[in-house]
Every structure is written in C-alpha cells, then in structure tokens.
Image (cartoon, rainbow, N blue to C red; front, side, top):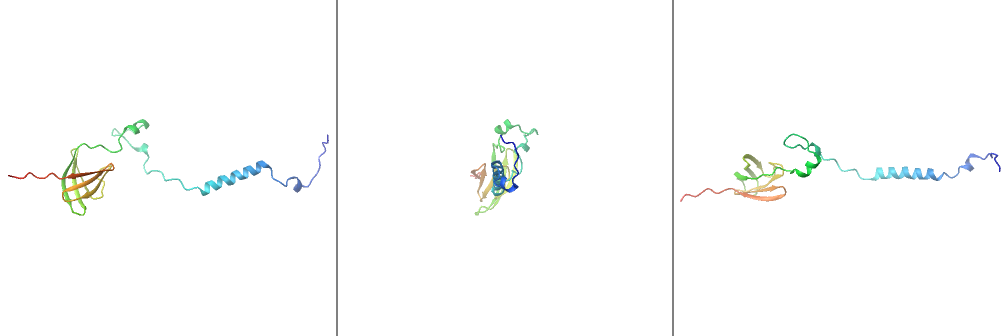
Length: 143
C-alpha cells in the first residue's frame, strides 16, 4: 500500500466537474427556465367566497356554501309600468315580493337579473341565465 501523497498540478486533477455539480447546475437552470418562461397565473377573484355573509351576519361555513343559493329566489314578479320603444330601449318598474324595483335596458336591478329589452307591451328579463318575457296586464274594457 502506497500512502504517499503525490503532488499534481491543480488543472490536471479537476479537469471534469463532478457529476453532482452537473446535476445541481442542470436543476437550477431548469427551475429558472420554467419559472421565467411559464405564463402568469390567473388573477384572484375580486371578492373571496369567505367574505359572503348570510342574512344573520355570520360568515358562511364551508358546508353552508354548498347549501345556500347564489341569488335570492323570487316568488312573485309583477310588471307595474313600462316606458319602452320598438328598438328595445326603455325603462320598467317591477313589484318583486312586495318591493318596487326599477331598471333600464342593460341594467342589473337585482343580483342575477338583467333587463334585456323593454318594448311598448313586454319586457324581456334574463334571470339566472334564463330569458323570461313579462307582459303588462291589459285594462278591463267596459261593456
């Protein structure tokens, strides 16, 4: 056994970098390539779901999010007044569960609602993605 140290020039002993250094360098280069070349993430929603509150004022628990409706459900919708044109531009007044709600064409008078068109006799509403046509009741004719 030869335990004598031999003196060699520095350049001849370390001509090739070790395998672990090559792997580490490849990993760092790959990480930064993915980081710099990947698309930006989508923006966060403006209001988080946790900020939604129930009518009691308490924040929603995760299980309650599945059980609550996104928009208030209305049972009675009655058309009270129309100021409309054949082109669909106009204004309408509704009675929704005992409360008066007014809006013009293109407006959102209630959450989940959009007034599509206001014609002289009918109003087209989009409620939760479904189009409903409401007509004004005709006055009774005297005989």
